[in-house]
Length: 154
Image 1 (cartoon, one colour):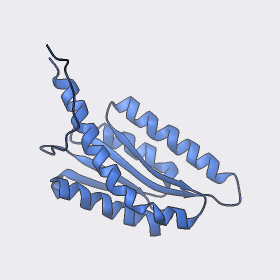
Image 2 (cartoon, helix red, strand yellow):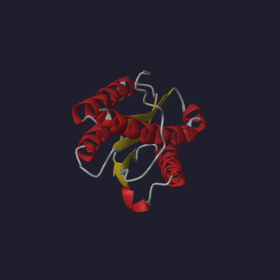
Image 3 (cartoon, helix red, strand yellow):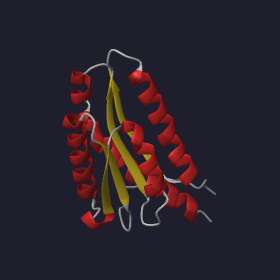
């Protein structure tokens, strides 16, 4: 007898995915949002199964993520933001609070809440990482399917 194994799956049948994007540093985050949504569409998720929501900044993402994750039609939430270091401690506080909030939203909802927050020292580093948004879309679909498979274990 072999052990039960849950393998990565990118099946999108019936999946609902939310994308929550911070408007602060929108020259980075809007490109990330567009790439994530395009990747979800490439994977086969219909436009009607994608919910895109905007937040003022990264700090506000966890609250929206929690509300979206609590919806029955949402299987995963992707949080997108860019926290770029400045000359004050503000960066540290926002990055920490956003990280904690996104983690809490996932653990409290029992659904994948993907951390797509770029925390960089400068704008050039953030721009160089925009393409990671495709990976966040893949992670959302994979994790939603992992949870489905776990729930279906007999």
